Image 1 (spheres, rainbow, N blue to C red):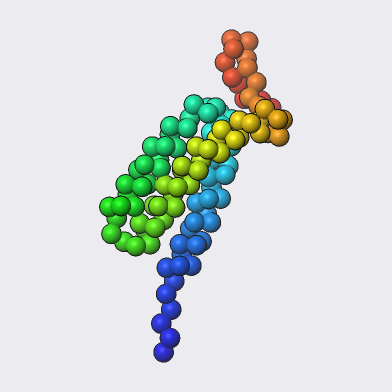
Image 2: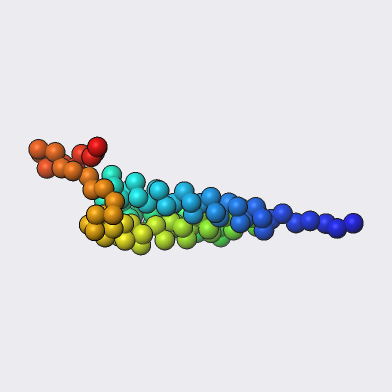
Length: 105
Protein backbone atom coordinates (compact mmCIF):
# COMPACT_ATOMS: atom_id res chain seq x y z
CA UNK A 1 0.00 0.00 0.00
CA UNK A 2 1.20 3.53 -0.80
CA UNK A 3 1.74 5.88 2.12
CA UNK A 4 1.00 9.53 1.34
CA UNK A 5 2.69 12.47 3.03
CA UNK A 6 0.70 15.68 3.11
CA UNK A 7 3.20 17.99 4.80
CA UNK A 8 4.40 19.50 1.50
CA UNK A 9 0.86 20.29 0.41
CA UNK A 10 0.04 21.77 3.83
CA UNK A 11 3.15 23.96 3.77
CA UNK A 12 2.38 25.06 0.21
CA UNK A 13 -1.22 26.02 0.95
CA UNK A 14 -0.33 27.80 4.19
CA UNK A 15 2.56 29.65 2.49
CA UNK A 16 0.17 30.80 -0.20
CA UNK A 17 -2.25 32.06 2.46
CA UNK A 18 0.46 33.80 4.51
CA UNK A 19 1.88 35.60 1.48
CA UNK A 20 -1.63 36.45 0.30
CA UNK A 21 -2.48 38.00 3.66
CA UNK A 22 0.70 40.08 3.80
CA UNK A 23 -0.07 41.89 0.55
CA UNK A 24 -3.15 43.77 1.85
CA UNK A 25 -1.58 44.02 5.32
CA UNK A 26 1.37 45.99 3.92
CA UNK A 27 -0.94 48.24 1.90
CA UNK A 28 -3.18 49.00 4.89
CA UNK A 29 -0.24 49.49 7.27
CA UNK A 30 1.39 52.00 4.92
CA UNK A 31 -1.94 53.77 4.37
CA UNK A 32 -2.81 54.17 8.06
CA UNK A 33 0.66 54.45 9.65
CA UNK A 34 3.11 55.23 6.84
CA UNK A 35 6.55 53.67 6.60
CA UNK A 36 7.22 54.36 10.28
CA UNK A 37 5.40 51.05 10.89
CA UNK A 38 8.31 49.02 9.40
CA UNK A 39 9.66 48.10 12.83
CA UNK A 40 6.46 46.14 13.61
CA UNK A 41 7.19 43.93 10.61
CA UNK A 42 10.77 43.56 11.86
CA UNK A 43 9.60 42.42 15.31
CA UNK A 44 7.07 40.01 13.77
CA UNK A 45 9.83 38.61 11.57
CA UNK A 46 12.27 38.18 14.43
CA UNK A 47 9.61 36.48 16.55
CA UNK A 48 8.72 34.17 13.68
CA UNK A 49 12.40 33.39 13.13
CA UNK A 50 12.93 32.61 16.82
CA UNK A 51 9.80 30.49 16.85
CA UNK A 52 11.02 28.60 13.81
CA UNK A 53 14.28 27.80 15.58
CA UNK A 54 12.69 26.60 18.80
CA UNK A 55 9.58 24.74 17.58
CA UNK A 56 10.28 21.03 17.16
CA UNK A 57 7.32 20.25 14.87
CA UNK A 58 8.70 20.35 11.32
CA UNK A 59 5.62 21.73 9.53
CA UNK A 60 4.96 24.40 12.17
CA UNK A 61 8.64 25.37 12.21
CA UNK A 62 8.57 25.72 8.43
CA UNK A 63 5.43 27.85 8.52
CA UNK A 64 6.95 30.11 11.18
CA UNK A 65 9.94 30.54 8.87
CA UNK A 66 7.64 31.47 5.99
CA UNK A 67 5.85 33.94 8.27
CA UNK A 68 9.20 35.42 9.37
CA UNK A 69 10.44 36.03 5.86
CA UNK A 70 7.06 37.31 4.70
CA UNK A 71 7.38 39.86 7.52
CA UNK A 72 10.89 40.81 6.38
CA UNK A 73 9.58 41.12 2.83
CA UNK A 74 6.85 43.40 4.20
CA UNK A 75 9.48 45.92 5.32
CA UNK A 76 10.79 46.37 1.81
CA UNK A 77 7.30 46.34 0.33
CA UNK A 78 6.18 49.07 2.70
CA UNK A 79 8.78 51.43 1.24
CA UNK A 80 7.85 50.31 -2.27
CA UNK A 81 4.21 50.97 -1.42
CA UNK A 82 5.10 54.53 -0.46
CA UNK A 83 6.57 54.96 -3.96
CA UNK A 84 3.41 53.53 -5.53
CA UNK A 85 1.27 55.97 -3.53
CA UNK A 86 3.45 58.89 -4.67
CA UNK A 87 2.98 57.76 -8.28
CA UNK A 88 -0.78 57.82 -7.72
CA UNK A 89 -1.30 54.08 -8.10
CA UNK A 90 -2.82 53.83 -4.60
CA UNK A 91 -4.81 56.37 -2.56
CA UNK A 92 -3.03 58.68 -0.15
CA UNK A 93 -4.42 59.64 3.25
CA UNK A 94 -5.51 63.25 3.33
CA UNK A 95 -4.54 65.61 6.15
CA UNK A 96 -7.22 67.31 8.26
CA UNK A 97 -7.11 70.99 9.25
CA UNK A 98 -4.75 70.21 12.17
CA UNK A 99 -2.21 68.59 9.87
CA UNK A 100 -2.99 65.08 11.05
CA UNK A 101 -3.74 62.48 8.45
CA UNK A 102 -7.35 61.43 8.16
CA UNK A 103 -9.11 58.72 6.24
CA UNK A 104 -9.82 59.59 2.62
CA UNK A 105 -13.17 58.67 1.10
